[in-house]
Length: 253
Image (tube, rainbow, N blue to C red; front, side, top):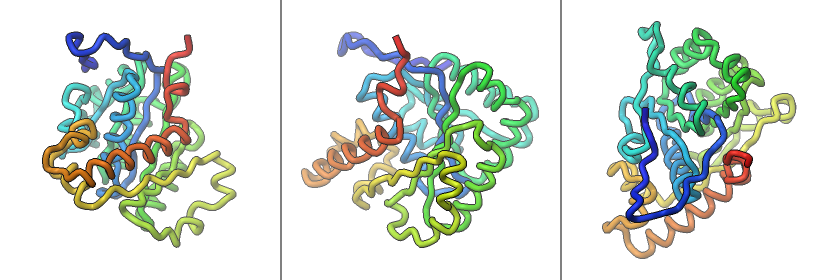
């Protein structure tokens, strides 16, 4: 089991315990920014001193490479009928917040896990909140994937739609698929993930940098580092507005 490691020679700060929960970076389509969102949420937890686990279900393991001391690799596959590895997600979530980074094209296997292991019912009985952070670009594939997920999961999870402005700036199809009636019925939250400067984003991705590492990356110019700091402030404001904040995540004393 993965434990958050603290170097007590460098810091005596007490880590803030977090409430049981599973937060999933999700989308059927690859390359929309799921791992980016996961890394940003991990960075927020670290800077806010919140305790958490991280689960990387993507074969590329970009989340794991950026946060090796926090992340646990797992896989979702229709071939894994025992589901022992993904079942650990619920075990971990009983202890603290779990951030799950899903790959694209894993929708059927993920839904099979939810069904075969009765995860939705079990999480409700165990008071483990599931949040489905569904990352979008303005493509039919993304919207249709979300609507299928919504039909499958229904209101057994909190659904947050994340419009990734780094992938798309024009959202012509959004209102066609995500109607006011749908938002009201499922109490959907809609947030816009800010755009990071392209060359900075490319370097972060290619080098599998955590955002802690990115902030001191020697190849970045002064302007890039300043832009990155501003980007992180904007992202954190968006996350906090969506309920991903210290008060909502910490254990109530």
